[in-house]
Image (cartoon, rainbow, N blue to C red; front, side, top):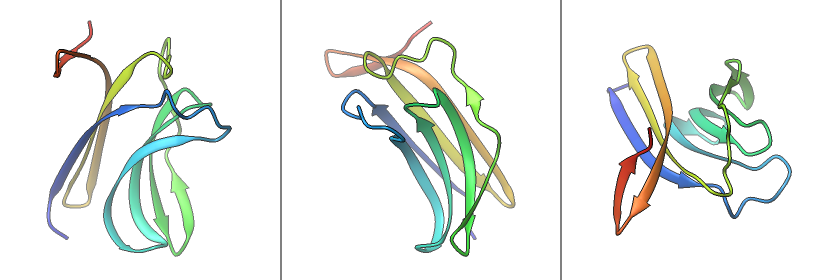
Length: 103
């Protein structure tokens, strides 16, 4: 596999459904083989998982303090470098078409 980095700006305000997540997929080799970094609407958390042969092997959820997906936007970064995976999530806001970090 080659090294890859993907990032996205996400708003979950539409996802008023139990179990709704939003995320990014890397190194997909088939429908049951991939890596995913996701934000969970109901779990109020971020996690990285591997799906191999259709079986999900997830890291523990990382809780997001004061998570308010109905009002906030999030920046997800997901990177694979060799055998290592890195992920992060941060709050951002959109102002006049520009995205700026929230402190």
